[in-house]
Image (cartoon, rainbow, N blue to C red; front, side, top):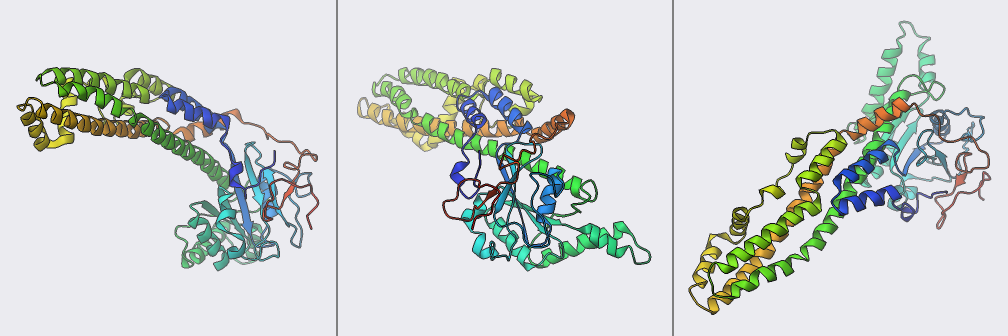
Length: 441
């Protein structure tokens, strides 16, 4: 299936994401963590844009990253003149849902300027950017970085063809490869910082030597970015899901408050208190269970992620289900209404009917306010528990991947436009599918 990054709507959630959301929705935190762990082992849909000026070595870099020679079937087209006319998609060598996009060179007719081409809509279709140059980074690269940052995206700078720089320096006396590479890195960083890019991450490499210099580090760093992005996406999903759940649950507090407030209309001191508190305690304990913050759920979650239950409970700020008692509910109600309203409520009981009706209204409003706050706190606690539970899963999934020593997951199939370097004109309005290998007019 071909994917056009310019059309953001095409990035629909995968079944695993929907399962993760459903598990969070019903409060099954152990299952949510299990799904997250599985998803972290094979990152979801992620588009990496490779962008730079014509002749910077973008296409050669893509081939080296894919482990392909320039003349292999499925390799990006390279040459002395600009060969990338359309944005071209290539499958990641290890992850089937991750794609590298070789974009036309900046300054060519197909990519006239950063301001002209890099619109918010265009940038939003990519998740990460590699800005490539074979010489010094200049203002045009900094402008591109600024546009990417404005869209809250991340990027690396790639200084290609360092083998040529090292070859030229070898003719000089007292040649030192380490010193030359350090000078190139510092020069790149200095130019970018002067252009306003703070703390730029620069990788020095040669596409002809993918096992040397910063190439292995770049691959490892990108791998970490993939897993971090997946974890961040899952946590965002849990946040939105919990927000929806909180809103739905808060709609039910009116019914409970109305039920607990109605006995208050009967001027019999003591009856309302017992009825209200018993119902509220049961309800609040059920709320904890619905969010997965009861003891059994937290124990199962701790076992799933290999953490201590105490560490998960440490991030919970609201009372646990076993801690909810009548005394605690009374304290929460008092905290909501304040000493002044508490006094008025007590005073109203001395007036047989009018006072009882006033007490019922105070009981209703206070109960709704307290329960709404309690549900909000539970939603926030659940978010913190999940974040704590999944903490460190990026490294675990990376270790798992290395232990498996997975082979390349795509084949050089000339009939497959994705693996064979099918060309996609993502700049044309309405373009939404890969074309064959013939450039479009």
